[in-house]
Image 1 (cartoon, rainbow, N blue to C red):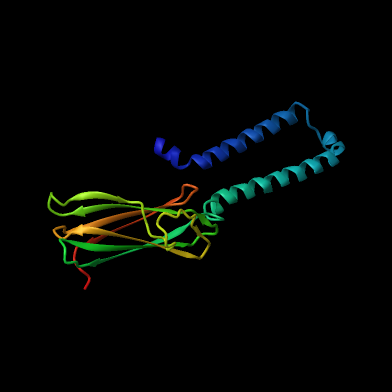
Image 2: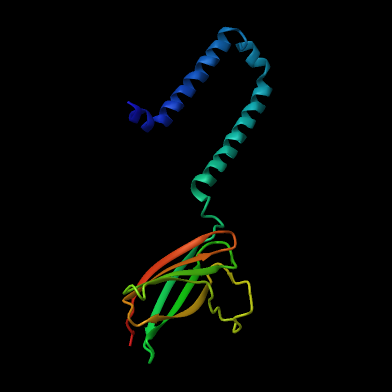
Length: 199
């Protein structure tokens, strides 16, 4: 019974509201508060009231439609992330992982000051298994010490690049990447690559 009530909560609420309104109008009519003569005399006032109620219903419907269908889509921040990792051999006891993150703005608003962050998990024997966090990226400015505010306009794409030395005894590396805008919106992508040279 409780499950049935929960499923039909909207219909039950509507029916009870309609019943209350009908009974209230019947009581008012029976008590002679409203009569046919009174309605005739108040014709102009009722017409104005009808217009006001219609306008309020339209405004309420517009607000409901916005929150139901458009909120979170119109002028929202949206981004598509793409992560590529290439592995390169060296003459040392490690391999170089070149990490390229691409962020495309597919929303309707500009993404200001996006900050990429990677949490790496290196899989392998106990002596090499570890977590790393990458927050320093090469962003194409040519100066690592220069702090520039990056902007991604709608339909534009921005790339970030970083590299890490991974011990050659590691089996694979999992990259968990997040991109955070200055408004707090966060997008994520995850990828695991084998610790083997692409060549």
